Length: 119
Image (cartoon, rainbow, N blue to C red; front, top):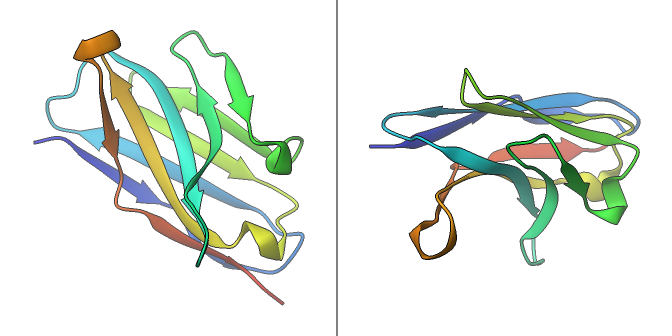
């Protein structure tokens, strides 16, 4: 059974930093895209950042210049470095890992980790 286990969430003051990690365990192979999504109370889940197998990255406009996504393929792990955090970054953050392509693709989700930015 495949599991994505997130860590690194917590509470921080505005302007602070957090680093989220998400490690995959179980029989998961040929991971291509990895990403981070978030969902704030009363809002839809949104893509925060994504990274391809080749290392190309994509960010939501709201986090550009503040967040950095990276990955370690050997460890099947994706990271999200979050700097200059704002109260509006408060949300549950979910990691994703996609395997396969086209009709054969499947996206795994983590269980979510809470990030709270408050003074």
